[in-house]
Length: 324
Ligand SMILES: [Zn+2]
Image (cartoon, rainbow, N blue to C red; front, side, top):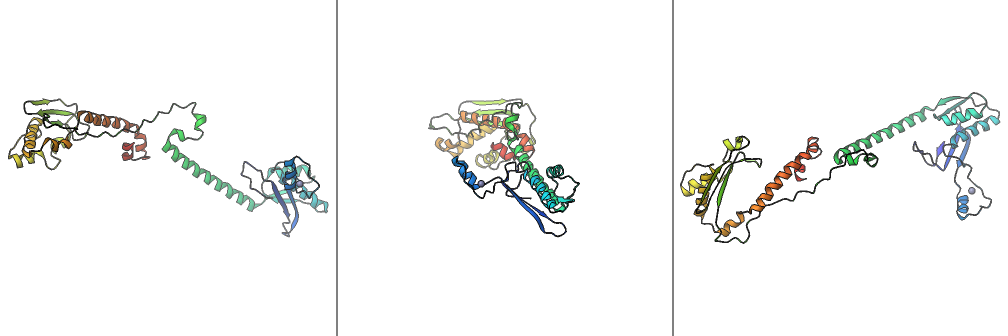
């Protein structure tokens, strides 16, 4: 049987089909029949609510499209047997409905052979369909991992039993150190320095020192963690180290990496350069902006932990996670 439209496996809604019976020995066409659910003339007049005048009407089928094939099969056998021939063997594809209808309507035994070509084609078609489905499932799985639970199939049906999805917070505002505005020449200058357990932002302050023209402040703090290898073994990572600058310009040696001595020397160095307060202004920062930067750093670190499942499975890179 040939169809105007191929059945999808679930849906058979072709408007017409043509059946052909071919002799296995001769290869010649024995019978042909058409089943059609459609007629343009009838449809036109039906649309107007008027009965169509007599016409050469192709519509000869009012049942389902799937029912066309069994009907054609029975009709073929009856027509052939009217010509005093007996149909003993049928070679056709595996269609249980057609075979059952033939056995109900024909009163002698008929052997059924499966058409190998048809079976092969049908198997190939099914395999292709399965491969396509598998590919679609794989693609969907990738999306589900990337997009999370909300991308799952039928999420709207499942969501009654699902825990409420957490709301993703807005991206962090990147804080910057703001220099002091409208700096005055009369502003008192405080030189300060910190000694920390490491060079990363995850440090403890161990010493804080500050000097101005009148006072000296120096305080040691017990750290909560040990001093890192970098801080203890390689404290002079940056070029233009203060120690070098001091020995070059001030011709002095001092106890570097003691915050108190550091700030004292820093004050002397700045005074030696004779920089005006306005020249120093771009290198200043407000305490508020510094506090905001530190706060942002802490929040960012907490949020990074929540993205760990994605970075661990290489769904996103660590750099991307940091941006998020
Ligand atoms: Zn018609």
